[in-house]
Image (cartoon, rainbow, N blue to C red; front, side):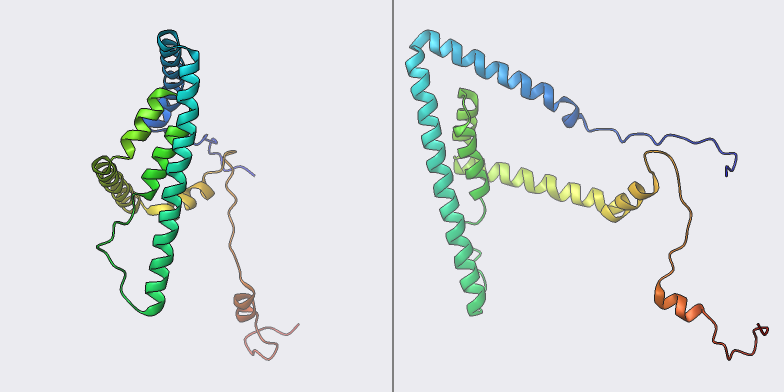
Length: 193
């Protein structure tokens, strides 16, 4: 059954500029890492580059292990304080563990640029600046989502705009509503059967 309206294909949402160029950026980063490793290998020798890569894996593993232990210790202390009824101590240095782990992961990745970025993330002033920037960006994105209808509205739109363009009209009737709608046989307004 058609209503005479021509079916329209829903337009695909536009991807952000960052997501559009991310694969190109990753490919350029990989090419730059390989080129830099070959330049260093030509100048200092292949054994030196190999030792640098192994040292990066060992150092990155130690950084991640240390940050993980510190995060677990802070979590267990916070749980103990909460169970004893004390307010959490806000003067302690919280956070930063995620950025430290990210720095360790970047050090583990083979390449000199990723090693430099990982070591840069281990510097406390850089961690604070990155943390503040990430927090402000996250808060802005949450505010934008709230003003544009939020996630509930996004799910509603995804349900209504199906890929094939078909819309199924209907009404949901719950069992308790059906029982309330069904008339009793003793109802005098009904004609006899």
